[in-house]
Figure (cartoon, rainbow over the protein chains, first blue to last red):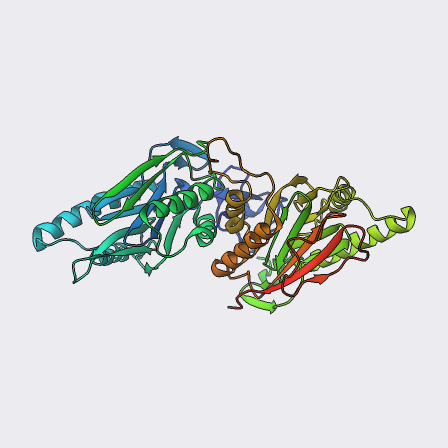
Amino acid sequence: MSQIWKYVRVTPSGGRVRGVPARSSTTSISLPGTPDHLSSQSTLILRFVMSIMEHNGGSVVAMAGKNCVAIACDLRLGAGAQTIATNFEKIFPVTDRMYLGLAGLASDVVTLREKFRYLTNMFLIKESRPLEPSTFAHLVSSTLYERRFGPYFCEPVLAGLERTPSGSYKPYIVGTDLIGCLNFAKDFIVTGTASDKLFGVAEGLWEPDLEPEDLFETISQTLMNAVDRDAYSGWGAVVHVITPDKVITRTLKGRMD
Amino acid sequence: MPNMSAIVHPQQRHFNPYAENGGTILAIAGADFTVIAGDTRQSEGYSIQTRYAPKVFRLTDRAVLAVNGFAADGNMFVKKVKQRLEWYKHAHAKDMPLRAIARLIQTMLYAQRFFPYYVYNILGGIEEDGSGAVYSFDPVGSYEREACRAAGAAQSLVQPFLDNQIYFKNQTAAPGRSHPSHLPLPDVLSIVVDSFTSATERHIEVGDGLEIYIVLAKGRSLQGVEGLHGLRELSTQEDGERVFVLQRDLKKD
């Protein structure tokens, strides 16, 4: 997500009008077709307008390995540049072999976490069969698309192991945008305020068929080095490595600034 | 009632003298060499203007300048720096030292403080003490000597990767050992190529071709450059610092 600068018009009374076309100075400009009380001596000022997706900060990354997947997030919760909390986990368990990461607006992170907890429980009660990642991915997608014109400001990442007909497990990672467009990747998924940095580092470090411990090192290095170049993410990290017989969860300390 | 059609409203005209032409540049300093690289794609918006527009230029036998941002400004700026270096050579009968070129670039950029060259500069080369050096600049001349720097469209993709691979950030050395402060040339070259293939994969404004300049300190052996495919020497003499250029293909999609 790119940062957004907008020209905001400030009137003498202090009220301001948004969405005025970009202009090159901060001097008084009167515009055609505007009421006199606005055009006279109103001033265009360049202001930083934060997008909703970046307001709370935070990043999530997921990677596929050999017979395992990993998912990791940072721990910062902010309000713009101000840090509010440094223990805000953005990854939640869905089943024993599936974790969901939610980066974006913190209130929607909590709302969606509870919504998906409810929907997962309803699925298990009604269907009385295990919830597989590929099923849950489409549940996530349709839940988000339901709010197509007033979306939750979250970009989920799902990491899990999918049970095959033969009874073995196969790595499954998927990401979506905020209206539920699914992105099936066989390597890695990134989201959050450090997504561009995560793309760069992950593209450089990731390789196919990593064993759980190597995958842990790769995803940890990817996340740490990416969030260290992002002011809105950081303050430590949580990493989950999911294997067929166990989930390894580690909390990492980073630069903590 | 006055005739409303006779009222002429003021009209604002707008001309934007700048463009953003994409691409990425990168430089890494070694103990006795420096590598300066840039991709060769030049774009405006979603259009590719050309697949071969160099962004890295040899200034002297020990200085190479990479420019990124608004291509027209970049080309003009390189032209003017080269002109100043030629004047210096005529006045002093020697090439300008690297740190002096860095200060010259600062004053030239700051001279345009209120109508800047819309260009991020990275200067690489060999210092008078024989060490490899990288200087990075902002568009108005603020500068710093560093061990490595990426700039341009894919800076945000490449710089954290370099933090990890060059500065060993977030890595702990084995007990009783420490990280090297400078990497050998073959390692640096493979990090540069990996950085650009990664950036090409995930950024639409990066790709087509890669030009890697290698500056070797005076008296350094050719170890690490020998046998490189398609290596071209650009230096004017063999007993001073030497400059080489290496060209590689990047994906064109």
